[in-house]
Length: 266
Image (cartoon, rainbow, N blue to C red):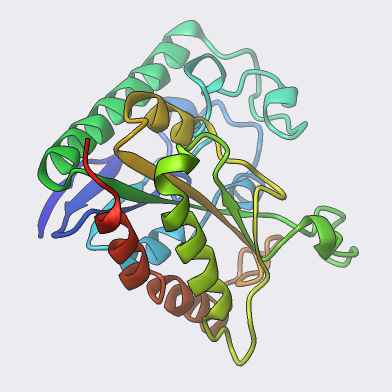
């Protein structure tokens, strides 16, 4: 494996056609951005996806972002990648004042550089393997009524939501179905996980950009884990629950690699 790392993200190149990404794992921010935050550390962490970088370790090829989505959100369109008003960020007051335009442009330069780095990796992987699968790993809150409030209804909030809204289902349906089947049958702390497709999320702009560029060669599974492995208000992780999810996710790798190798290269 080879490691390419800078302050904003790391890319580890492995030895098979599966890539795992954790683009909301980071919490860091540039000093000039940090000084403008009105939102405190806890508030930012609550909307980030901590520990998804650890989940990404199930793949030998990994892309893990170190900087916060509050600096620039890599899962949104370029026009919406920098949160400017509360409506862009779950109603949160992110900034002390209006963002200076030079700050916005520096953040968008990061967005562009990240896209370039990911596309370089995917160009290389498609040339090498023909077809590629991406585990686009995220997590989501389900206790928005406060630490003592009632959790969100499980009917609309699966423990794992698999977003497939923009992928080429005709080519990659077998990959999707195998992933969901294997994840549902994995042993999560003595029980099955509630895994459903396109219930809570259908995938973000990161998936869309990749599918737009590689419609017949890259299958992005936007995988959202409900934060059952941590307290989303305190940030405290349940190590046993996290390792259990990681083990379940790892159990899907063999089957997904089998399925993607069955897809004919164009």
